[in-house]
Length: 396
Image (cartoon, rainbow, N blue to C red):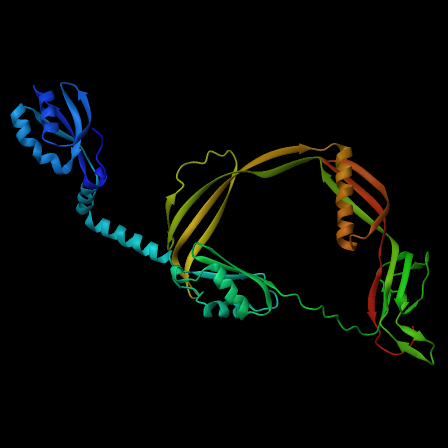
């Protein structure tokens, strides 16, 4: 016969029946309308399963056929409940803990705002509170995200777009502020002077009086474009504007190792989840060794908070990520190219990406202690002008 529905909820037992008339006993059971299943021969008898409600109806049939039975298995909700009742205090504590965990996970615990620069986060959180989004609010009481974002956009006119995302008990409000017209800074009268020794390669004076020409050699602090127009008797101070480029020489000392060790993540990882109670952490999931030869473990703590108070209860997740290690070897030529590339990147980072490297010359090179050492001279065309305020009305 087939297993009856809801047998796990109703409870069933597994019996081992022995005796001279086992077959007659099974026929008598089915004839009495008792449902049995998984009937299998076992030794000098048979095993079978039946519902707990039909167990006591077997006694007259056992006497009739002269058979004996032995219970070898008890399964289902009634037996589980009986075992828990023997440990009722543990069961009650487990139930209360589960209820508390469900309640705590059904509340909003933290709200953070991202993307705002001009609008204060407090104003955004205040508008969200007026729409029912605030810490310790029940999640099921929140409005639909689309409705919330529309109402928040009305309350915050300085925002062109707003989004709301809920992850567990945390809510993230992402905003895009409306574009504001650019406010041009106020400039005071000034000169443009050279910030370093150089040879002028290009000069363009948008406003002011140029004092140097192309191919002029200038020193640090020399005035390139003057902010004073006219002569000593009739002069006017203006804001000098323009662009001046020049050839500048930079000397770099570079060292590059011939052997490098690179570490990278393979993408494989194993997570371990803990319940944190004060200084204690109880592991819930992620048992077992990850089996990684090399790994790095990152720990994320997510404590529960009440207002500004951090509660001694929360979650901790350990992420063990597999790391692969590769050893690379450079030739002397490769190390030289690597060193020159590093120096060029530093030039562009320091003096602007519009800087142009005109030439390079290796002044000295040696290989020692597994490294290549170089002294390199670069000729670079770059912006050389910087501002110098005019502090009096006298000429240069």
